[in-house]
Amino acid sequence: MNQTSEPSAWIVGIINDFIDNSPENTLKNKDNDRAFETPLVGFSSGDDPLYEAYKDHVGPFYMTPWEVVTVTFRDFTVKPGDLTVISWILPQSAATKADNRRETFYPSERWARARIFGEEVNVKLRKHVVASLTSKGVQSVAPLLTPQFSVRISPKYGLASTWSERHAAYAAGLGTFGLCDGLITPVGKAMRTGSVVARIQAPPTPRPYTDHHAYCLFFTAGTCKKCIPRCPVGAITEKGKDKRICSRHLFPVTKDYVVSEYGFDGYGCGLCQTGVPCESRIPSKKDAGTDHG
Ligand code: SF4
Ligand code: SF4
Image 1 (cartoon, rainbow, N blue to C red):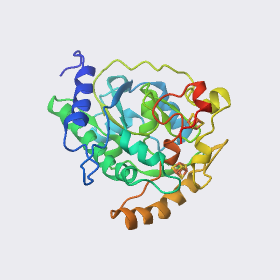
Image 2: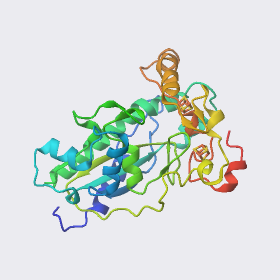
Image 3: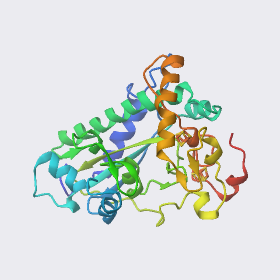
Image 4: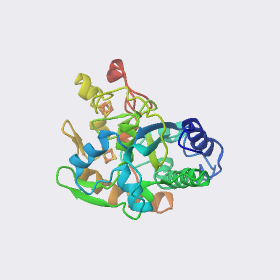
């Protein structure tokens, strides 16, 4: 591949083929269920001003795509505009969502498996995308897999990481944030997301929004709020999600439960991602009055 070729379709093909056809896409349960449905893929430019804005908001430790690439390859000839951030959304399966929709306190087994073994699939996908690009002579790196990736304390937001897959997906036109902090995408909020930064120039995916809350009915219409009662520990209010309360439920409450009931070392919750109008799509105003439980 060279800088003038059209890499977007080739990259989308690599990502979709891995999820649709690889035996790696598994929840590792008795039935060997697949973890994720066919992905959505989007692209943003390494010189998108949003990346500098994220750094301004979150803190100086937040890495731009250019910083991720230069710290990895020690190649300072690269310019931000030479880079593309490839982002993907991995939709949870219908069975995983249906199971978790029925839960009221602990995660379903499939959901907990998707949190652990599904994320393993996501890690393998990141590595597969990097290996595929490398085989074509393209420098690329998955920010989450770099030694620089870590969780820090942001003056404004408390716990925050040096790279956010969800914010990369937002930049790539793949979704906007909901009251519960999840990213609402065209396939909903019950998903996992990942990204790779590559030294290619792919056309950025248009963002069909200008507001970072454009798909959440609470922010657009003052309605819905259905994620608030879905949270078993009161972490979500009209002010948003309290990360500390959520985290205290994940660890140790759900961790202990997953180990004792499902027999593997895991955790998870996702109740606010299921049984709500934005679970599997961008909600419409009439969804706010519908029962999704
Ligand atoms: S459940 Fe309703 S209020 Fe909560 S994030 Fe989804 S659309 Fe927004
Ligand atoms: S993940 Fe669970 S504990 Fe955390 S905010 Fe959502 S429902 Fe509440």
